Image (spheres, helix red, strand yellow):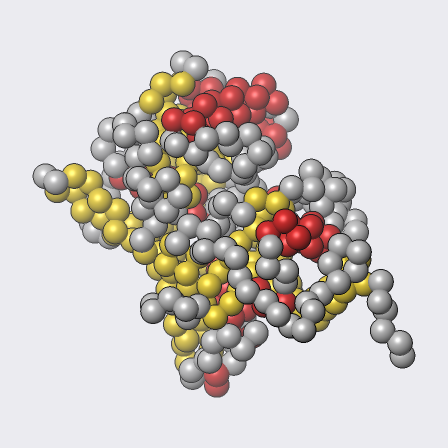
Length: 377
């Protein structure tokens, strides 16, 4: 059978990572320059239509994410994880943030792709998130040296159970802005709203729900329909981006926004996380680390909302729109200051499909003579 010269095949795995989903690709199979790469990812996902009808996307920000993997040249890491957030409808690709949910699938995907050799029992995959330079150790279940997705671990926002994947996030402070508190302050006032700007795993702007006239326990639908809130929040987010040294963030998904309120279901605190133009259906792994760090840090907007645990590491349970997520934060509160050391979570992932995804050759015809070199960090 003659090859179809009008379409370019690209090998992929479609995986759920945490509460997100998307294609996992080998970076070596993709164009080097980011402009062409963005066009390729837009075609793969089908950005430009609310249902992503012409691609693999699922019509929501949590299902239009892409992971690109490669062997790492870092002394510590086994694999480099390059993340892209593709918009649902706007044909935009943001290479600035990372995604902790999609990162959950990086360990098993790297083994499935042959980038990491598994061992019998459990395989530790050391991951460098190149977007932010964060380092994450992922413990993947590999009985008989084969990735297992069957298990009894459950996470809110995903039906059923799967094999647990333990994640330990290190060197997450200041990954994007270079500072734990990018504005140099524990709180700032923007348009009459007190916020904490913090960069732990994900740069965030955090406020109390009450400051927006909300309870902080609203459903995703209730929040998404409150466009006055989103308009006000976006204005504050953009002004905060400038204060955080991130410049014009109007076309970027970072910094993300979060609101906090007292817990209602036995957790430490209630939280809602925004992506930022829609409400997250559950909670981002990176956002959870930043919000948990905000709760633990004296003098932030979280003060007075929660009873802080005394143990170290501290287990912070964030109640979100689909349930809760627990973050174990290792920290030090000394005379020299407050320091976040690392954060750990248990998530799950599952391989959904594998094969070739096709894009129009007019967008990219594939590598010529297999010549490729990476361009990003």
